[in-house]
Amino acid sequence: MGVKILYVEDNPDNRLLVRRILMVEGYTVVEAFDAAQGIAAAQRELPDLILMDMNLPEMDGYTLTRHLRAIPELRNVPIVAMTANVMHGDREKSIEAGCNGYIPKPIDVDLLPEQVARFLHREDDNEG
Ligand code: MN
Image (cartoon, rainbow, N blue to C red):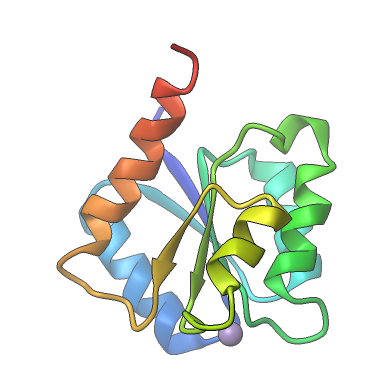
């Protein structure tokens, strides 16, 4: 079984970019473009990692992360915030909402594989 990553993102250009990068790395990529889809996909797919655009329409990524964290099966899945909002304590806000970390936008195509691998690896280390 491969490693499955759920990407919640409303911007189609970002979805295409991230999907291409992650598929080259051999990951299975599941996409959702809003919070309702994100919750449904997360419960259905039980991904190994969730990449979360924090700036979503209707329900934002912070609120969505809190919803996902309340689902027992998803409690230990790493959730990584992706946002251009690097000011005003947004990193801290992401962590408080239940994210494990943060990948800044714009997405760096050269760095993304390493950034994702680090969060997948961190999950393995948490047990020890
Ligand atoms: Mn967005």
